[in-house]
Image (tube, rainbow, N blue to C red; front, side):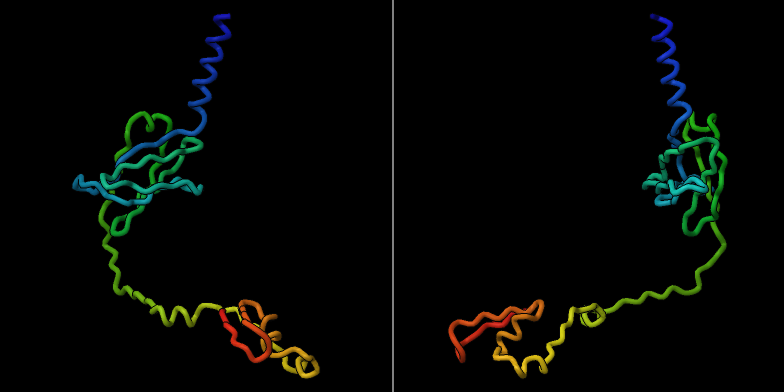
Length: 164
């Protein structure tokens, strides 16, 4: 009985070791200052995260070894091979400043009025030829249009309210 329990515990511990591993680390610059909001991802997968204000990150790797890719605007990209031995302690990744310059940034925006004119609206067409031979008045014909509501407070010639 004791051997079965020991075997089950060993199997559980081994299973945790073989499956997803948490990789923890810190992204800093060459002078040791933390780099916040750097993207950290595992190459070839869609797994990724962002470093916090102190440069710390945690990412879950499905299989090790894996390539860790660290990027941040204004710094050179860093690729690092992470193995089982590396996940026992926090990984420190130092990024070097990039010499690339951005010459021009164009920011465009549209106002509310322009945005409203660009958005789509539903439209409907009322064919008048079919109304020529019909005894229906204009209120009854307009009631068939989608998005249009007509309330009549009496008979022909009385007041009505129109709402869209």
